[in-house]
Length: 472
Image 1 (tube, one colour):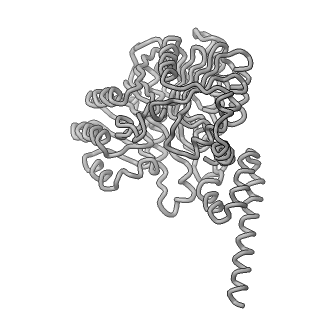
Image 2 (spheres, one colour):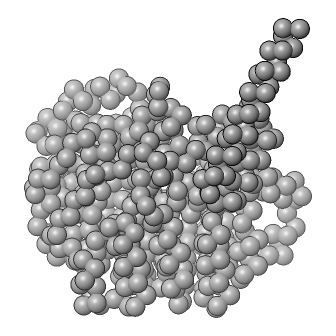
Image 3 (cartoon, one colour):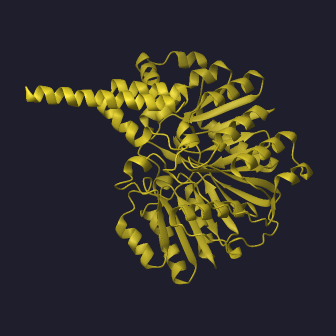
């Protein structure tokens, strides 16, 4: 009798909790697709669904669990503000995108930049090590994944050497992405003089409120003069690949005033993790003219008012006149991006999409596949990359090239801290296009007829995974 009463009370409390959770979720006026997805998870996977919602489902963009950064650094060396845009040699479409990026993420426009593009991990890491060894004043690094394997140890050894020489070395790692970096290794780095901080640690009591908000940015700044960003992290897998294939990624090396954009955003994140405000002008040295590329460094994250990267992608697709080429390892776009891509293709614009045939995340892959039919129906050419896993995150629209950490999915647009570089330069756009076409040659194009003949079991998996796409 007592156990029956206890069971009834526990069941009633649980039902009340689920109903209250659904009520408050509806009151938040979320995207209805995401709300429906979470309601289904809560109803059909009661205990697991509720735990998932507690850890990754709650929305904090308008709350203060993730406190807004009070820091705003505006160093003017070789940067261009909004009032100067009419005087630049930009097309109307480029000027419109640059204005949006300035307003939604305070992204200054930087001139006189040289851009070098990397698609091979070995070459990239060799260049990074060479630049790190040349550091005289400071090294700043920020990575989602930074492991102490062969590649990671090689870079750590250089960092320790430079720290012993008196160079200031600051490192930010994501607490979840770099969970394999042992506390012992972090202590070892600190003992050599390296300042290393974890971003939003998820240990108790913060695990439920922080685990869903990850720093996915990739930044290196050396003496304020050389910078790197893109899709590569620091780990052996980027060189050695996976058991079933190579790892394909893209990164860029910057020289010129755009490095100040990387610097600004690293120091904002440093303030976020350390509460140390660094404003010394030595971190913003005068920049020589290195090239002709105009660039913006755009960030997004749950601490910002706007979903800036998604807005910029949407605007770029809407403004395109000739081509839209996209590479993304995870393709789970919101309706606004789907409509923009379909509209562009139906308007006669050459729209192409390279996706992975195989992935490191099965559910995400099947969810990605569920969007292919919508793309094909509008005349978008879709290619599946064959040699291995394509982790590259590049977009080319006409004479604009975009590269960075953001995937084409809900998590990158709404929950992760991301960083992308927008480059307004025909030469860089053509180089990115050549890279895209080379990847296309290593991919198999999917026709609508062939895609319709795939197995029923795969279609079911795609449909089920699609229901979870707003939550992934």
